[in-house]
Image 1 (tube, rainbow, N blue to C red):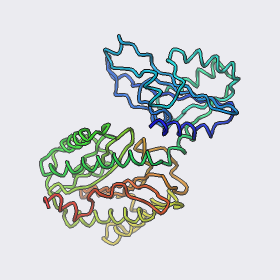
Image 2: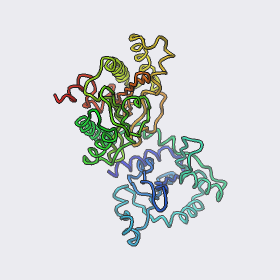
Image 3: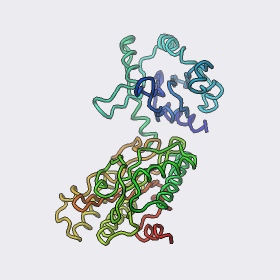
Image 4: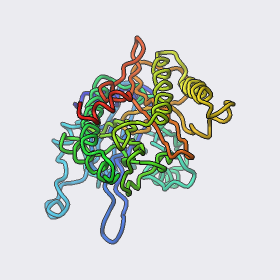
Amino acid sequence: MNTFFTRNRSKFAAHMESGDFAVFFAGSAPKSTADAHYSFLQNKNFYYLTGCKQEHFILTLHKNDTSVETTLYIEKPDYDIEKWIGRKLTREQAKDISGIDNIHFLSAFESNMTRFIYDNKIKRILLDLEKLDWNAHDADSDRFARDILKRYPFIQILTAHPILSQLRMIKDSFEIEQIEKAVEMTKDGLDAILKILKPDVFEYQLDATFSHSIRMAGADGISFPTIAASGEDGVILHYVENAKPMKDGDLVLLDLGAQYQQYAADISRTYPVGGRFSERQKTLYNSVLKAQNAVIDAIKPGFLFEDLNKVCQESLFNSLKEIGLIEKKEELSKYYYHGVSHHLGLDVHDLGNRTGALEPGMVLTVEPGLYVAEENIGIRIEEDVLVTEEGNRVLSIGIPKTVEEIEAVMSGK
């Protein structure tokens, strides 16, 4: 596997200029309360470049005219600590995972940085400086940037995030295999849900059934908090309470995914709690399905990402106008109020541009929806789709989604 991570570092280094220095941090789990911490979530850019899933590690790359010097800093194994919190990676294990020969302990990082800056006359340092929110908490890279500028004001700090975003947007065969495995586990989890889905079952039981199924299959866990929204809560895009019993005659909207080897699946299905759709539910459901098929048909290299949502909106508008729910296009936003697609990969909402032409190797979600609050109906259908040289391939093709398929499965046929 380390050839994949070695290749990723080489692709990143190709965007560096001679003399550039890059630093990446694995991150750490924040404190929750007392002496407890939240579960550690690996910085996905660090994982993309190293394959390591441990806290506190640091990666550095220095590019000169002829080569790239790569160093991985790891925690020093200490039995007195390990017997409380678990084993640390040895140098040999870190080397085997990452493909990096030059391994140091974290205690050497600051002194090595000082000497490196002095000896190599470093003028530019690239850091993963991603801010999605003005008030977002500072990451290790933000704090390091301040420290560098305080000590070495002549050094220019640049963000490496756009480079990594561009690289991660195009998946290679190894990544596609991991996503396909995550999708397969997600299908199994949905199959398990359908076996217990009936009136008076609680939403959290669907949530628990899914988590149990994918973990038993070998998944890392869920790729994001499971949404099991029935009845009136189906119109809430990120409903995660999953707290109430489901009613006969209602729909339940499921948005969920397994994570496998750090790669995510993201699938949505909408099922009738009682096993059969009403005629009204069927009409609205088929409107969503028609829009999804139109978007999938449009996916091919060269098609503009931003035009996918236009295809979706046009299809939904025509369907809703035909049944008399709306008359004008501007009314559509009352019933459809999100985009139809995002990139998928190491993150559920993966890095990548949401403008410009589609390219082979991109993995996208296609998730149209309709949310009719006055009728307590929320419907979303989501597939994971690979852009290929010829067009596209639906990675989640085996998960039942037509009215007829769903009702047949739920009736035991």
